[in-house]
Image 1 (cartoon, rainbow, N blue to C red):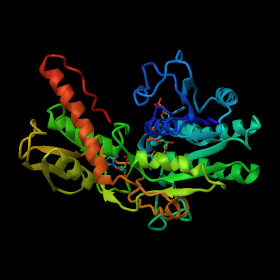
Image 2 (image 1 turned 90 degrees about the vertical axis):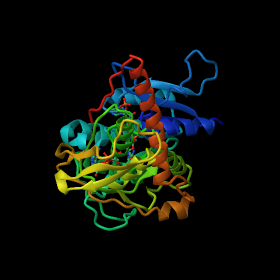
Image 3 (image 1 turned 180 degrees about the horizontal axis):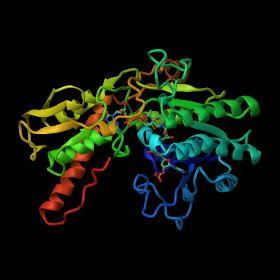
Image 4 (image 1 turned 135 degrees about the vertical axis):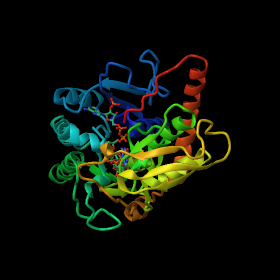
Length: 373
Ligand code: NDP
Ligand code: GDR
């Protein structure tokens, strides 16, 4: 029997990898996308199936996590075996600027999904995955962080996700639903949104290498993160819904690096060695040496990274390091891609794009490169 999955946030980084993964497994995949004034399906265009195609296994529905009747109607129509609730205003810094909206989507949105499943009498059929986050640990109470580590959220985003974590646990306990939380640490890929730190770095440095941007402006480069690859993490989201009993799992690599290290790796991928000097808001990174031809627009002595306090957060999460022992022992999950390999893949992808832009500009087809972040 073909299984049916419903993915909220299918147009996002994880949603796109998960949709690919489930289609390969033979699922019928339904996704909820928001109405936007421009196309917002770039990440899934390669797997999109025309509505006129016979036997298509992928379908998109217009919807929004703030709209209860719409969510209920979609769930009624799809009657999914599995729901992956990935939709969110997922940017921590933005949540300080839009706290109420973030609470509505990232907190109450999850309740709307769970309640729709229950209201429709699907609680025995539909398994529910909630995209929980290492941001729940915020001001960390124990290192490394595991499933039993106390939470201490540090942003409107994390506080909203805390509500979602507990309402998922509550629906499991109160109504016997198969509902579980994946407490995922940061995971990245070439499909990562351009304003998250890893992608901002790989894209920014690739643009600088090709002469499309002069300098990268960063916030707290001492922050430590446990970075994995999104492909490894969506596999785990699926595995969590294939168990006999619903449970919550930390998904992480167990290794952490600073943002500064990620900048250094990315520069090295472009053949550029950097020297960091100065302190605090005056810290800069200067080009110390260049090898190869990947960075034709860069010269030794150029300052290509500066600190801009605009990117500091009102309350920062300084360090996160996950302990994925439970996922390894109970589910047999191991991440396959290291942070360094992921960085290589991201730089290669952004360099290809930057070269395309630079080539078009050289021939008079100048495309504006957005650098707002
Ligand atoms: P993205 O920001 O790439 O994707 C978010 C998705 O949610 C997009 O499809 C977006 O649509 C959609 N969305 C946003 N607001 C709404 C709304 N009001 N109604 C319906 N859809 C909406 O996030 P990721 O793929 O990186 O993350 C997926 C989930 O996992 C998120 O919930 C995130 O908070 C969580 N998470 C992510 C981690 C990470 O490191 N990536 C780690 C831990 C948790 P659109 O494309 O139109 O913007
Ligand atoms: P995070 O990811 O907040 O951990 O949330 P992000 O990549 O935005 O920041 C990671 C760390 O880098 C520091 N930083 C900067 N961050 C951004 N975005 N831009 C900068 O210029 C910059 N300079 C330094 C940040 O201060 C932070 O410490 C991500 C999201 O995907 C969430 O949805 C998810 O829940 C968590 O990961 C786990």
